[in-house]
Image 1 (cartoon, helix red, strand yellow):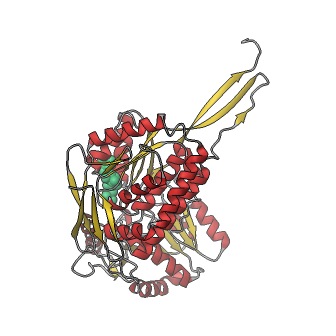
Image 2 (cartoon, helix red, strand yellow; image 1 turned 30 degrees about the vertical axis):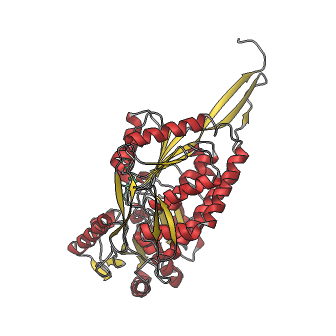
Image 3 (cartoon, protein in one colour; image 1 turned 90 degrees about the horizontal axis):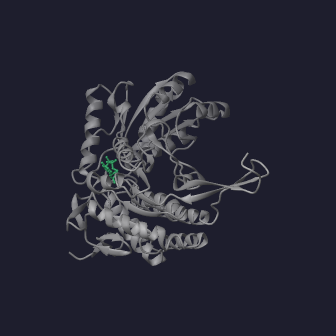
Length: 495
Ligand code: ADP
């Protein structure tokens, strides 16, 4: 099997790399295995890619270690910044291809995939800007000592990313890691390997030295687990489910106590008060849950509406949702494409079934859309109670619940009644209410009168079981640097 395959999408035709990108070369896996990636729009295979196993992870780690100790250690911080900036420019130059691959492999609407590519290049450029602005402090203790800190790179970083934003997660992980002087072994999700491999060709084009970034395709239980337990990986950064996050933390503890950052699941409350601008709130609530087909860790899946506007809200929200165009991701007006895989489709349909069986009312949707591809109707449940599975568990699909509330105190308590704490939102025109509620919600991000606004300058991450550490912004740099204190004695006797 060749390591490049010509692929035709409805918008572009391009050469898809299918190998593993290790030490700046395209190679086959040691065990010679491949696996198919499926087009979720028509359920047909797109192409087979080479599969990494533990031995390939090992080769990638060796390459990353060599680069970390060698070429990358000798590369000036300002040059690291220029390389990232060049990579960002290449993302812009090849944005049509990158977006098309994302829509083909993941199923997301092309218009949204284009935004993902823009946000990815923005993120890479942003971290390129940080590369030569990373420095420690001097700290005064007494006249005879000079103390300073250095913010040194952690080393070889294993990065495991999910399938819901393949390119964006690639950039969120690689940007801060290499800006700070680390090297990387990144494993994509088995459902969506293609855009990351194409982006690896841009790593080559940008002139980033061999071994600095290694990209492998493979499964969680084999390649992913090999990263989490590898004795020569200094840090692992993971985005995915809370269940797997726990496994990674355990593997890190059992192996070499590598540093771990986790960005995990959510069951985020989205709260609408009587005094909200209802029309605006409905647009944000709709976007909050149905954007990316509900496949967002921060999806606003628990909607709370105050009693004074509850009836009006439900009617208008249903009408708004009915306008979401579900269908072929390559069609211009499509808002919602298919779910990423058969497994996800089945999981979500089971949740819908469980909501129906528990006695919740289906206000909209509640079924699959069409009869080909993994499409699901945007689904709204009312008459729900906190003990229902659909109120407690992350569904990761286009399914939300609406609950009525009376008081601010009551909704804060309900909003916080979850083991997750990734995001939340409040819609009100009263500044005091907005700030009181924002301060009381236990979540890493609280949106006021909007939802899903994410910028690479602003940190993102979870309270409680939604994660450890923060991505994006200056905060992310702390995940990829370790502080060394240097203490210099200038004079004076020991006692
Ligand atoms: P989902 O259930 O939505 O597919 P996962 O958390 O299972 O989300 O997957 C996210 C990423 O974690 C993927 O790249 C997947 O291959 C990887 N992964 C899954 N299981 C493991 C594991 N046991 N160890 C390491 N990585 C894993």
